[in-house]
Length: 183
Figure 1 (cartoon, rainbow, N blue to C red):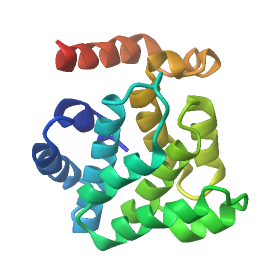
Figure 2 (cartoon, rainbow, N blue to C red; figure 1 turned 90 degrees about the vertical axis):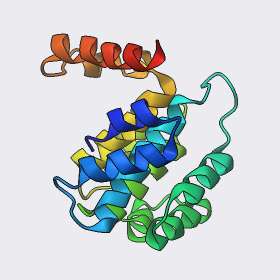
Figure 3 (cartoon, helix red, strand yellow; figure 1 turned 180 degrees about the vertical axis):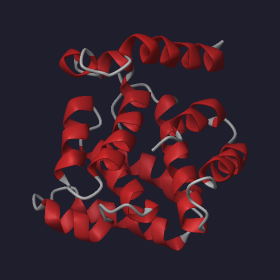
Figure 4 (cartoon, one colour; figure 1 turned 120 degrees about the vertical axis):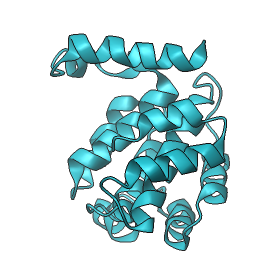
């Protein structure tokens, strides 16, 4: 859930992104599935930054990019499973199929699915993620990172951002990170 800056800085170099994500993730995720989850989350954020939210969102193409990037079968299988779940109203079935736990292979797919379920609304995507239950802070944070990368800072509801702890420090820092990459 802390890997979003890697996606921002290395979105244009997937191999370097994977390398840096693995190194960064190793601190708390020594298992290869944890490292791969960090890389996939970073790649998802990076991919979202390259897309224009004013153009129609192509969910299938987005998923294809993610599947092509994923190296571990469990991630590819869960990404492929998403297509059959788009219209599933029962969140329990979604959590059963994709996961909602603390393990990266259960939380990263849930975050990606939450974003893809509501790509045009930061609030709906994050609320959806939280309503999946389980490790809600992690899944919600990862969903917010993807949605924010795609929609931009202005998509975050004011009613949320005004309550953000250390907001006066965090918001300028986020803008500076973005400017470092885009200059």
